[in-house]
Image 1 (cartoon, rainbow, N blue to C red):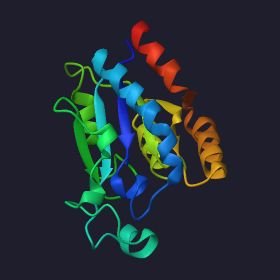
Image 2: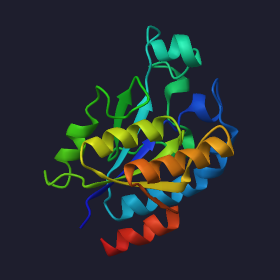
Image 3: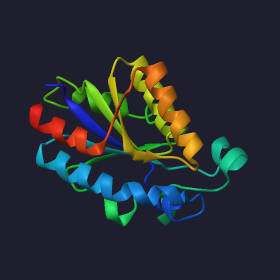
Length: 187
């Protein structure tokens, strides 16, 4: 068994419909809903890695403006993909889901402490938070799968360049959501 975990990055109100909305995110929601349903059916852990910024965060003030501020509606997961009581939520303040968070410790504690071996990255944005989370996963020895139709970016070019980078630099397997779901049955 490959001990997979699904990581949903930043499918938050501010990124899908709010201050930093990515209109292209709307078309991945049905794919992510199918993936989450299948993961729950096969007891694959689901982890939401969510921006939860403080107003003092440089990323917020200097680069992207005020968004996904901890405790606000904008920092909540969109209702269509909301976490259940069995899912995990790990807050982050930078692009990477690993940087100064408890994500690595959580992943290593799952599967009766055998740990996750493969992370399946989904969400926003292919060339930013997915890329930086993949880098930190790679540096920590995780295998990486990126759901090609379960990640998105502001532009098609950013999305395609992001996928190419992830494949070439971090040896990420780029797979369709339906292919990932079929793999749950084989694990």
